[in-house]
Amino acid sequence: MTPFNVNRREFVQVSAAGAAAMMLGPHTAQATPGPKALAERPLGKTGHQVRLFSLGGQATIEQPDRLDDSVAIINRAIDLGVNYIDTAAAYGRGISQTYIGEVMATRRNEVFLATKTHNRTRDGSLTLLEDSLKRLQTDHLDLWQLHNITRTEQLDQIFGPGGAIEALTQARDEKIVRFLGITGHYDPAVLMDGLRRFPFDTILMALNAADRHHTPFQDTVLPLANEMGIGVIGMKIPARGRMFRDDGVTSMRDAMHYVLTLPVSTIIIGCDDVVQLEENVRLAQEFSPLPEAEMRRIEALTADYAADAAFFKKTGAGFGR
Image (cartoon, rainbow, N blue to C red; front, side):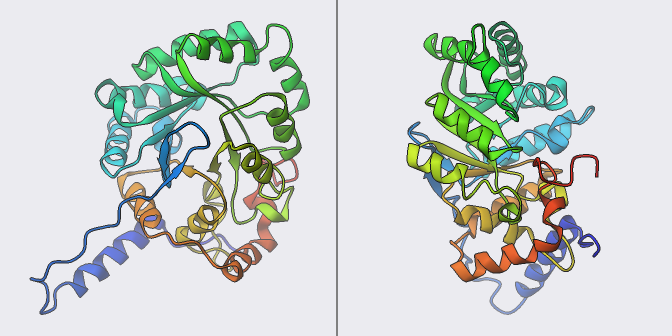
């Protein structure tokens, strides 16, 4: 079994060339319909109508010396209707927030801005919050999240005396942040424990076409979050490229449309460049819910390499592979 060897950028370029060739016929003077607008869904009970595709603050946006490229991606995303941007204090050790802040300086009111704290204490999280606001060039966040919860011991610290939950609630009470969330991709049971300990507004969880083969989130955490009315943001959709195999899932369309068919509010994906961003937005614009049989077909394609496509889970192949 070999990795899928068709570069996504090449696929977009070939598709664009084919579309251009088709338009060179005798009907080129006729008006053609513009792209569909990005559909919206409620982000839980927050009142925010979030677009199906949201921008993640990783990939190029967390890499050193990529300011110009990152600003181009972020501005283009907003231009295309993306209205939710996710980052974290840990992404690139602040680089991601800094790049996003360059755009937020002039376009803050156009997006729902989310970041995270990876510190489990009150004081440490408040220090991170102050730094995050400076880097993001804003005086408030729409969403502040607990980053990458993996173990029960972390929850015990967060919800214990002097724990991070005190920072989150203080910041919300002082109207520095509007909503609070929890995130994770390692152990569904731990995330469910977190949801039961505190009335979070959102959850960012791993959801992709290989999910059901290894400690699934969609059969455990997702129904609980839906029952509680929590806004669900899906991540790990392409699994850093490990989703794609020449004898498995071969298209970003299948990867994205599979997760968007689930009861989620939006999905976040980090992008390498503007071309990749535009492809993802186009796929979100073209989305229609998949029939049950198609969902099962896509799932089955990942069975032989599910551990690799779920490398970030406790039962996955691991980050080192």
